Length: 236
Length: 400
Ligand SMILES: Nc1ncnc2c1ncn2[C@@H]1O[C@H](COP(=O)(O)OP(=O)(O)OP(=O)(O)O)[C@@H](O)[C@H]1O
Ligand SMILES: [Mg+2]
Image (cartoon, rainbow over all chains, first blue to last red):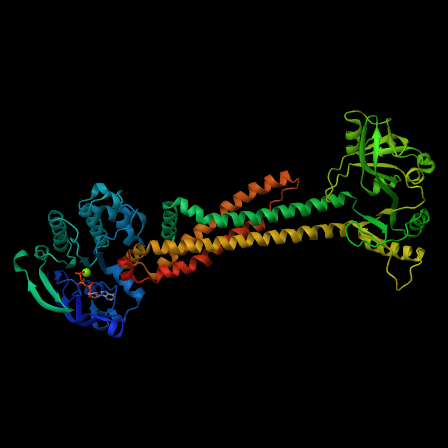
C-alpha cells in the first residue's frame, strides 16, 4: 500500500503561532512530515506538545502560520474558508476529541449529516448511513440519540459519521480517550479494518502506547516539533 | 435548499415551546395589524352604508356655520319663503323637506319616552329614504291644516306600545294628543351611533304651531335630481340663499350646505386616522416581535455553538450554515405570521359581530402582513445567522 510515492499529506516547516507578540504561544515550531495514502499513523506526545494543533491543520480546519501544507499536492494555506470546507467534506473524515455528536439527534441522522452537505439524495443517504452504522456494529441503534448510547457506542457513531462519505483520510483525535481498554481495543480494531479493507488513510492522536501499537507508524511530538518517528513492523 | 428547510423545521419541532414563545411576538403583531385594518375597513364601510341610507343625493342646509360637532354660530333661521324660492329657482332640486326638531318626552297611556320630535313634510320621508312599514303619509289637508297626526319610528313604537299595533292610537306630545297614522321601516343604528328609529314626525305646521311657536325652519333636507349634479345644486342653492339673506361679497355664508358625501368623508377620515394609529401601534409590536426573534436566535446560536462547530468541521459551507439559521428564523416568523392571520380572522369576525360592523376580508393586508413577517425573519435572523456562519470551527468545537 505504500507503493504510491507521492505523499497524500506533506508538511514542510509548518509552524503555528497562537495569539500575538509576547502573549502569544508557538504551538508548532517547524514540523516536517509526510504521510502516504493508505498509511496508518499514530501521533503521540506529552500534553501541550501540539498534537491537536497539527491535527487541525492536517484536517484543513486551520492553516499554518508559516511553512506549507500540501494535501494531494494542493497548498492548503492558500485556500479560503469555503475551499477548505469543500476539501473537508470531499476527502476527510473526522473523529473529534470528545465525541461531538449532535445532541437530541438520532445516530442515523448524525451519520447522515456529512451526506446532507454533499447534497446526496434521501434514499442514498439512508442506505449509506445504515451501511456505515452496520460496519461499526451498531445496526440496532440507528434511532437512538447520543444520550441513549454508551461512550463506546457514541464513539462508534462518530466513526460511522466520519467514514460514511468514504473519505480518503480519517483523522481521529484521541478516539479512545474516554474509553475503557476493552472498548478502546474494539475501536482500534475497527480503525485497523477500515485501513486494511477500505484503504482509508488513518491518522490518529493517542496518549496510550497500547493503542499506538495498532498503527504502522508512530510520530512522536515534543514542544511543537517532531521528536522521532517509529515504525511498528510487526502488526502489518 | 430543501434539506436546509427540513433541517430548520426539525430544529423548530425539537423545541416546540420555545419556538412558540419566540413566534408569539409576531403572532400578536400580525393579528393586531390585520384585525385593526379589517375592523377599520368594516367601520368605514358601515359609515358609508349608513350615510347613504340617509339618502344618496341629499343636501342638508342649516343656518350658521358648523364650527364643530354640534356647535353652530348664531344665524337667522330659514322661513317658508326660502323653501319656496329654492323649489322654484333651483331646477336641480327634486324635493325639499323643511324641518324643525325638538328633543322631548312623549307619553302614551302609562308609558313615556324621550325622543326627537320632528316637524316636516312628506318630503322628509323621500329625502331620508324612509319607507313606511304600515299606515300612510300625511294627507294634504293634514299638512296644510297642521293637524295632530304623526308617523313614528320602530323604537318609539316599541317603547310606547310594546307589541301593540300603533295605528290609530294617540301619543301625547307637549300637552296635545296626536294620532299615529304611520310606522317607519326600521333603519337601525346610524354611523353616529344614534338610533335612527328613535323618531316621531308630524306635519311642519303642527310642530311650528304647537311646539316651537314660530314660523322658523331649522334645517332643510334637499334631494337633488341627479347625484352628478350635486355640486352644481349646492352652488346654486348657496348663491340663492346668500342673496336672500343679504350677504355681501366679502362676508362668509351664515348657513352651511352639507352633502352626504362630505359627511362620509369626514367620518371615514376619522376612522382612517384611528385605524392608522392603531395599525402603527400594532406594527411596533411586530418590530418588537422581530427583536424577540433576533434575541432567541442569538441565544440559540450561542447554545448551539458546538453543533455549528461540528457542522462546519464536517464540511458545511459558510453560506449553508447561514442559510440554515436564516431559514430557521424565517420559518419561525412566517409561521408566526400564519398563526397571526388565523387569529386575526377569528378575532375580526368575532369583534365585527360584537361591534355590529360588516366583516370585510382584505386579501392585501393579509398577504402584506405575511410577507412582512417573513421579511422580519430575514432582517432579524440575518445577524445571528451570520454570527453562526462565521464561527471558527475549532473554537466552536472547543466551546463549553
Ligand atoms: N487557540 C489557541 N490559542 C492559544 N493557544 C493555544 C490555542 N490552541 C492551543 N494552544 C496552545 O498550543 C499548545 C498546543 O496545544 P495542543 O492542543 O495542540 O496540544 P495537544 O498536544 O493536543 O495536547 P493534549 O494532549 O492535552 O490534547 C498548548 O500549549 C495550548 O495551550
Ligand atoms: Mg489535543
